[in-house]
Image 1 (tube, helix red, strand yellow):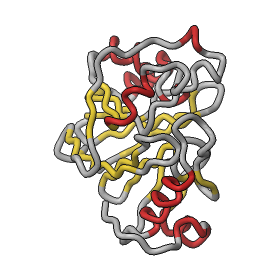
Image 2: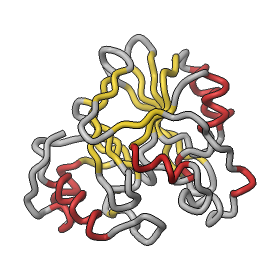
Image 3: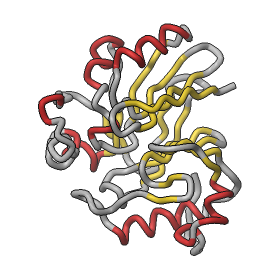
Image 4: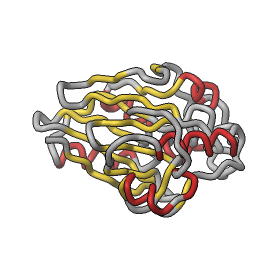
Amino acid sequence: MIQVLTVPVGELQANCHIVFDQQHHAVIIDPGAEAEKLLALLKEHALHAKAILLTHAHFDHFAAAAPLMEALQIPLYLHRLEEPVLHSVQQNLADYLGMQEQYRNIAECCTFEEGDVLSFSEALTFTILHTPGHSPGSVCYCLDTLMFTGDTLFRDAVGRVDFPGGNLRDMRASLRRLGALEGDYQIYCGHYAGTTLAREKAYSHYLQTPASGKC
């Protein structure tokens, strides 16, 4: 059985999701700040972190990644198109947020493409759905009936497109793609409360135009 601990971190209260299986293998999605708090939570639940996954490379979603990588000796994964964003304080918004001094470059990362599968245990196997719009390499991670949408889709809202690399046309296409997925998913968002795909299909006109897609 998969469990998820959601912890809002940092000034912008970005959601960090710690996803773990019955054997206590875990992955950390979007560790945006407060590395010590996240390390304490892993210890409290006796979790063995295998990797960090980024839905996108904005600083409020990865500011704690470098210290976690050092403390836990784990790799970081993100979409290929987000790697340049990760290394630029202008593109990753560290400068925009007034946090340039807190930025630590991550020299090594693992990249993936649309449709790739990341497996960290028998139960922790994620499928990648490329959903550009908020940023060029924004992704959603699908795990059974769970979906981690980052800043692409929120409860009652969708992601901004006015940051560097944002694109409204891409965002509309990504949201239509989510709306065309079969079945329902429990959605863990990058900010705010969670939701379900069925609820957002009913609420958001952005998700209501048919488009092919399968997670």
